[in-house]
Each structure stands twice: as C-alpha cells, then as structure tokens.
Length: 460
Ligand code: GLY
Ligand code: MN
Ligand code: MN
Image (cartoon, rainbow, N blue to C red):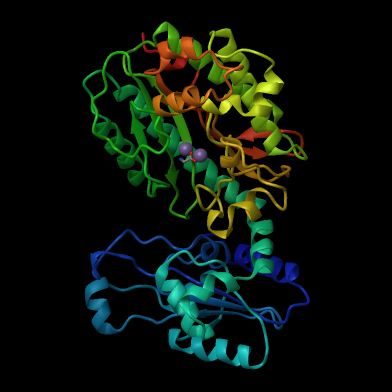
C-alpha cells in the first residue's frame, strides 16, 4: 500500500476529470470467489481500479466518491467475534480507511440507502463495466435494473477518466513494476538453468510460480511454459523437453500491491539452438530491437507494430520463406502468417492493463481498429505518451493449421513461398517480451534485463 496522500491525490484527480458532474462514483471491491464450495475460494484478487483509488486488498468493500462534495466513503463491516475465531484479528475498518486517507466509514448495508438517495435526487451514479457475476447482481440491485442491463449503462465518462489517469504511471507505480520485473527475471533465469532434455514443462512451471510466491506476490497470469510455443495461449504443461525443442516461457510476477510484469523468453532445451532456430531467433531479436528503438511519445504503437512486422517479413525473406515488396506484403497482412498477434499492450495493475474497461477505449482512444487478421489482435495502437508502460513482444510462429489454411486458399501467395514453408511446418514458435516505460524522449526498460541474446541463451 502507498501513503494515504497517493490515494487522496488520485481521487482528487478523478474528481477534476469529471468536473461539472455532481453525481457519485461507485466502485465496488471484489468479493471472494468460490472454487467448489463457499469456504474454498480462489486466491482473493481485489479489483484493480478499487486498488488504484482505495488501496485496500480485502474482500467485500465498496467505495463511493461524491463528485459534488469531494467526500470519499468506504463501505464494509468489521468482523464479528465469531468470524474472528476463524480468521484471527484483522485491522479495524476505521484504521484501514485511515491508511488510505478515508475517514468516512459506513456499514456495507448502508450502500443501498446512499445510492437510492442519489438516484432519487436525479444524480448520476457512475460505475465501470463489471466483469464478475456477483458485482453485476449487486449493481442491478442497487440501481434497480435487470442484470442484463447493467453493462449497457456503464459510465463512458468514468471509463475515460479512469483510463486517462491509470495509463500515466506515477513514480510509486513504476517502482512497483520494476520490482515485479526483478522477480520475473529471477523466474526466467531459474527456468534457463533448469531447462534440459528430460525435464518436464510442469517442473519449470512449478519452479517459476514458487519464486513468485516466495517473493511475496504471485503470478500475474497463468504461466505459459511449453515446447509448443506456436500455440499462443498454451496452458498445458504435459510435455517433456527434448533435444531440438525450443522452450517458450511467458511468465511474470505480480507484487503484493498488485503490479504486474510480463516477460517471455525462448531458448533451446538443449544447450544450443539448431542453426535454423538460431537464424529465426536472430530475426526475432532484430524485430524486437527495431520496435524498442521506435518507441517515443507521439509515436503510434500501431506504427511500431508495423515497423516490427516489416523487420520480421524482411528477415524471413532472407531465409527464403517470404518474398516481394515488404511494404506491400505488410499492408496485405502477409507477415501475420508468422506473427498473428499484436506487438504489445499496456501493463500496470493488470497484466493487460485496464482490459476490463474496454480494449478500444484503453488501447485505441478513438482510433479505428483494423479488421485484418493479425492487426486486429493489436491491443495497443494509440499514440504513446510519456508515463505509459507497455510490453514489447514480437513472436515468430509456424502454425501448421494456419499454414495449411492460407496455402489452401492461396492467401498472400505472392508473398509467401509455400513450397519452402513445407520444410518448416514443425518448427514451433518463439517470442521475446519485456516491459518498458515511455519516457520524454524514448523508452526505458522496466527493471533489470533478462538473458535474451543468443550468447546469453546458449549454455556451453
Ligand atoms: N502474457 C500474456 C501476454 O503476453 O500478453
Ligand atoms: Mn504480454
Ligand atoms: Mn506475456
């Protein structure tokens, strides 16, 4: 948790952005989420926007910010003695509120009256798009509407104001993210040391999670730890590493305060890459370096993505896999056969920061989203601003089903040598990913650098 002034400043900033509106901002915190019965819950994760403005990491809280008076109220209940028998002593709500600069504490049951009083007086009640069923039901009850109306009535003004604030990271947030990266680099380093033929994906996945937990946080998202990196969201850990495999590890830690890191490494299961793997990895690194070099305030991330795509296309031309004019090929989306996802996304209190607030409002800020395969998966396209934090994560993949589909349709056949590609269809996939802060004149890597050159990844 940060100093109370940090939360007060953020709340004041939000109120300023919504100036002229005399309504309420309603921010429900998350509750526990049961796995197979009520008392056996998933690890608790607070809502990130609630954390941003109110910092408290306990379930069953809610907060209201009165845009007229500026008052912030925290709603919740202190545990009964009977509950304390099971949970042990927990800090009193008044003390928890004081720690985040809130002195007005009300019982949870008072939330309904406060919201009803506002709506009866014709005041707006702004809330963000809910993503959990219990919060949808809560909002439906508080605002007297059917559950399926709740999402449609979310406040776009509030979403825009929150996105605007959360997108520009403060120094206290950057420090947290750097420590998340530091733990994550240790996770990747450990995996590199552990990897060898005969080791299982599960062993590596378990070890990286252990390191994240031991550091006092947890994984920011389920780890991808696989010899089948061509499957983009591969969450199975059932294979053994074998000589000749490329192992792809996409994992990052979340700090105890909720800030995420998101790193990907790709390295050989055996000490050395094959010649072919080394050549493709070099193309990947060239594309990665070109992307990092292009980041600066005012630059559209869509253009960084396209520049990176051109380097991938050119590099694969050098390997005989693609051909023709690079600009025309990238405009046609030919590179997406090998690079079908986006270059990156914002990162912060969520690994895909604020994705629950709407990807287009966060990453496009009114710009048109492409419908082209590949480019449409780009989560961040807007012009960058100093203080944004984002991932850079190009990949090169050989996805047999996609190759067969494109080849069968003759798609982009003028740009792709499908005959040569037949000899590469079992290559697998590679990605490299780190996290950056947009600075006044470029970009700065968050936290320490992980091993990622060929020399650093080849062991002996
Ligand atoms: N770890 C998910 C991603 O890279 O976006
Ligand atoms: Mn990522
Ligand atoms: Mn990742």
